[in-house]
Length: 407
Image (cartoon, rainbow, N blue to C red; front, side, top):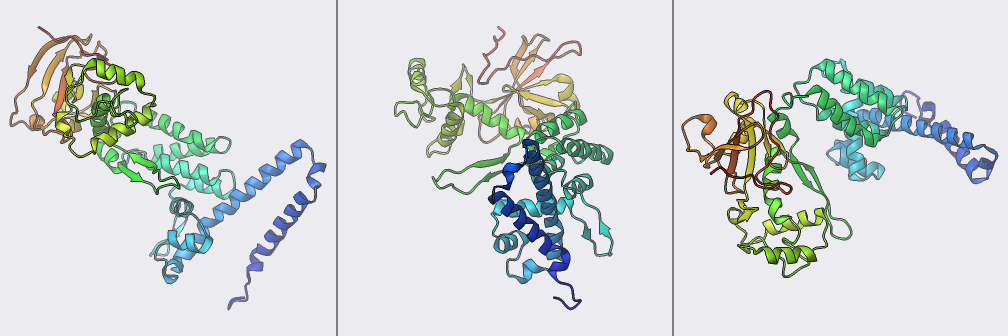
């Protein structure tokens, strides 16, 4: 009892504990056998709703604990370690609860006003037990990845769509729905800016498992993806850099005869993910010079960018790599600064009409600097009339064949 004469029992905690105890005893004493199949399903659904409502109470309790500075007074310093120590939670579970609180909680501001939740629709459905904690987690993920320039009305509509689906759908489908929402908000790829992509970038090496293996999570920018695609096109192909094959060609092997690579590929039993892992391992080995990776399918291991002449002149739009990754024109020009790009003018069918190496000029759009991991960037300027679709052929890539060079 506190100074106001209020006890925990006055909050209904005793009744809750008694109800849980009664339900547990009923299940253990065989009373469930008297219920029909429909009754069992209904019972499972009602219990799930109650668990979701209880989970939503974490938001209010975490806010209360924060306002009382319990995490600081306990010596934990921050809320996540406080929850881990107090409730015996994993780091992930405690972190998710704190993030949900930030998005679904009502915080009292210094002015005394109560700020509404960041996700009001999700917060209301969560408190009613209509959606689960996993639903809220995926809704937060989708909403946080929407571009900052999306209007408030569109963001509210996107949240409503996600919550409406969550009331009867699976949490795992929300990311796909989020991609569909983003595609409708940004059909031309102009709303998502380079700043939005840089805001999301990051790679996390998770804690090693009991077997010593470490999981990698994160997001990489289109620029890094383009560079990795160019390198993996050679080093992650079947037969290359196989740690299980001592005779497999390596990243430092120089010229590789086709017969040697074909023989190594026939011995290769790795899947695509294992080949990518071994290629990345080969890149970080001592003695590997990223600038001397040699040739792949008759061309240097370099990034190939295809862009329209109009987009290049206007400085807007996107460039496409050989593997299909799209990069903004500005970022594509930054990647190519400092190199001597090979300019190839193509017709509407993707056939080369003009080929030459460019020279560096004082124009900002042509002050290109090289990416430190490759020998440069091959930039192809596509002569693409409005009535013609962009060519789909690529000069370098795991699935492409090199085009015929003009005489």
